[in-house]
Image (cartoon, rainbow, N blue to C red; front, side, top):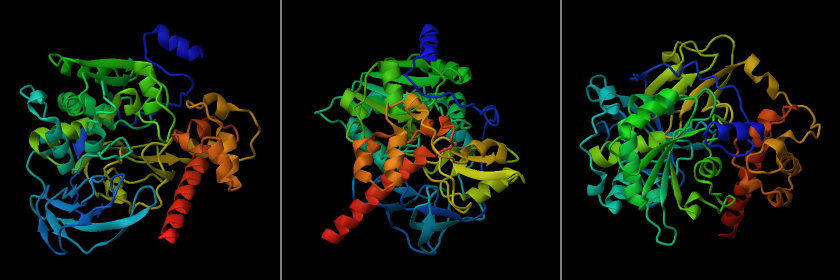
Length: 464
């Protein structure tokens, strides 16, 4: 309560509760984006979005060009996959996503010569967007181009962006928020993208506003990124209807149920049915906005993304422009490999990211970072019995009772867990972070949700 009052006194947008974990962004926040050009085989999973898996439209041993479409699905709830480099297609197989899920995939061996266009990094970070007029694009055309170029939510949710931006007459949108908070500790990929390529992010925001019919665009950035705030403020000059808002540095500021109340004072209805569009808002990640601009204006598909490689357990932290399908082991090897003290490799940041099952998993469209942690950083995760201190309740930004939900899940009483609003949990990890007993409450809740979904799927399969 006191921190929230101080935030308001400083003119910062904030929300009740939440936590303040150490930022630990110094490993990579000053490191410019560099291109990682792979020489090893890429692995391209057919599931890189929420929705229907893609089917291959190429054959084994077929040569493909950079950006050529290699997989798609007939369903609108899908996003096609394009070749991140020129090369040769391998035989279809199964691959493990960073989450641990096994899905169909296809290998791609990079060509020995010119696998990417020349000056690829410079083109990716191109800041010459002054002549772009988003008004000349039809809203339906914007959505069609977004889908054709495989753009999904790159903040981690991977929801197909063309569906999110499609106009719904029953639920009009008045505001698009670009989420530049990047509240997860360690990660700096969005930060660097705002500093080095702010102009296409603003164009992507304006295209999103045009697509969904919003008259206002807000770029929300936490106060601990002053260089990004300055860069974005310069980039919006001459762009009407767009504003930069500075938010308090607090976790999980980047969550839609925290950021929307913080900047607009609107409360999103409870999950799973309540969505930002219920309060007239669409929220888009920084990297997604960048990809929208490239896809719509220049016809460049989503084949690469900026990935932060960071933590005390890796030799050379940094921010890398990485082809989709790059194996974690190859990227970590490029960063000098792991230190002997490395203990845990996390896909994303430590608050919400899963520990990867092995280093052969591939970078996908939703991979914002790879965090390598050491023993000292994970010591508090050793579980002991609950002491009934209620810290998880006091700090939950959604006013849930995480310990009650977790206990119900432990005893496989999923009906009771649902009574405690298990599905409303955003899995932000605040409860796990503050628990003095080291109980992985968010992980229990995530496992409970997965188990309920699996049970429902088996029931439906049995019924048919």
